[in-house]
Image (cartoon, rainbow, N blue to C red; front, side):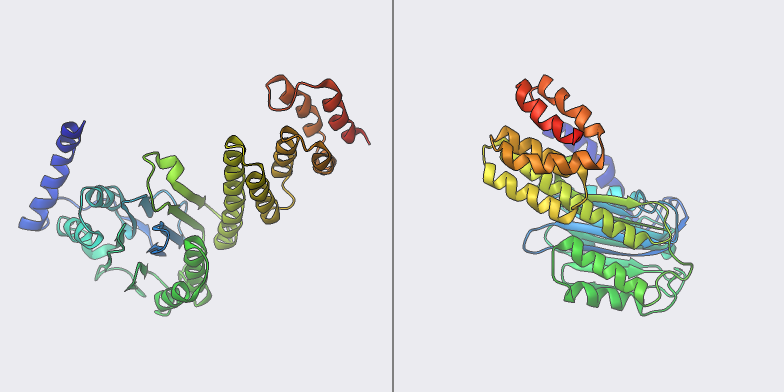
Length: 335
């Protein structure tokens, strides 16, 4: 497997070596006008890496932000070439620092004067590039464990406001990056307005299973208020992260830990029937039926389909196969 991995990387490394030695030789990548503002960042305590972005361009999420746990994060924008994301992560995965990966790819890109790209690696090495032909106002600030960059902005206050907000905001990495986006919009933002936004945050310690390493991977493709919608989705994702942690605690027989996680989820999204319902189910399976009944009642009052669902869970061992118990629960939906 190691030999095969090396063989797969040979063409990539050869391309980068040629670029560094001979200068730009290949044709520029796509010139999609994804003008935007973004941040790449690392939390030095948790090791989390992230990217957050807003743009007046449809569905910015699949194009600009790239991140991989234990490797790095990339934002590629302006007349964007998405290959910077994939190739940047591949270079950092094989040992290049973020700045080294960025320089190598710029050297081989004849369209670099219209690019804007930032890269940060898992150790916090970070750098950014703003091409001389990016549409003004355009610029960047590279700080400790972060870089903010913007182009086609209303004014040149945007990226300084982002840097200041990121450095001053308290909270986890997602909170701080969202604060940077809000600050950018507050001082003018994209001269064309707003349309889409996205955020990716990956864990500091990779598991080898990418879907587990992404604590946030959220996109708002088209909205009059993309940052407000993105914040709503981040809150919802936090709640589901707590639910998942609660389920894991149940598997480990840590009932009190599970209830703490379920409670935290409900505080974030107090009107979610889904979360309240599965909290109630967990209580029943812990033998705490009396505590579960008010929760079932709340859910049944929201939507009677949950009443119909409940007996089905007993048939697949997600609730005890106890007819009297199931009837006791279901009867709450009939009152």
